Image (cartoon, rainbow, N blue to C red):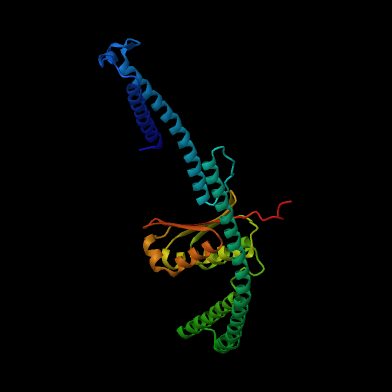
Amino acid sequence: MSIIQRQILLAAIFSLVLFILFYVMFFIAFPLESWSSLWERRVIDLPFIYIVPSICLLLGVCYGLISGYFWEKQLLTVETAVRELEKGRTIPVEPHAIPEVHDIWVRIEKVQKHIFEQTKLSQKLANEKAEDQEKIIQEMVSQERNRLARELHDSVSQQLFAASMMMSAITESKPLSDDRESKQLKLIEETIHQSQLEMRALLLHLRPAALKGKSLQEGVQELLVELIQKVTMNIKWKVEPIPLDKGVEDHLFRILQESVSNTLRHAKATSLDVLLIKRDDFVIMRVTDDGIGFEIDEGKTGSYGMQNMHERAVEIGGTLKIVSLKNKGTRLEVKVPVLQIEGDVE
C-alpha cells in the first residue's frame, strides 16, 4: 500500500471516528425524542443520518489525499538524495520548513561530508602508500632487472655472439655449393642471428614497468603500443589526458595491467578496446574484449586477480564493475570520483 492510500484510509477512519464520538456526546447532552427524527430530517433532500457522515468521510478522504501527496513528495526527495549519495554524487542541501524533514537533510549533509572526507583520506593514503611502496619496490626491481640484464649479456649474449662468429668462419671457409650441408649450416647461422635479435629485445625490455616519470596517459599508450608489437590481437584505445594524484594513477595503471594480463591468458580474444576518460567528475576506465567470457561468481571466488583489482578500486574511493557473457566477451569498468581540492580552483 502506497503512502497516499494509507493517508486516505487513515484520514477516512479518523473522520468517521470523530463523527461517531461527536454524535455520541451530542446525543448524551441533547437526547432525541425519537430516533425516527434522524431519518425524517433532511439536508439537500437526503436523510440527515446519511449526509453528515458522507460529508465527514469526503473531507477525510480529501485531507488524506492532499497530505499523502505532500508526504510522498517529501519522501521521494529524500529517496532521490540517498540514491545520488549512494552513487557518490554531490547533493545540494536546502533548508526545509518541516522540522522533521529538515533534520533528515541535515543528517544527509553530514553523511555526505563524511563520505567526501573518507574518499579524500583514502586517496591521500593511497597516494602516500603508492609513493613509498614505489620507491622501495622500484629500487628492488631495478636492481634485479639490472642484475639479470648483466648476467644475460655476460653469459648468453656473449655465447650467442661467439657461436655466430664461429658459424660465420665455418661458412666462409667452406666452398660455395648448394649441397645439403651448406644449407643446414646457413640455417643454423640464421637461427643464431635471430636468437641474438631476440636476446637484444629481451635486454631492452628488462626495465621497470611502473609509471616512473610518466603520466597515466603516457603509461597506458606505451603499454598498448608494446602489446601490439608482441601479439596479433586487434587493439584500440581512447585515452584522454587527465591530471590525477600519483596514487590514483598508479592504482588505475595496475588495474589495467591486471585486466590486460587476464585477457591475454584466459580470454582467447581477437580484439581489445581500452577507454580512459573523465565525465561528470568521474574518471572512467573501461577494458573490453570479445573473448570467451566467464561466470562472474566463479571469477569472484577463485581469482586473486579479480580481488586485487577490486581492492585497488576501493582504496581510491572508486567502484569496479565486471560484465561477462559466455562466448561474447568481458567488460571491466572502473569509476573513480575526482575530488575538487581547495586551492586547485582560483
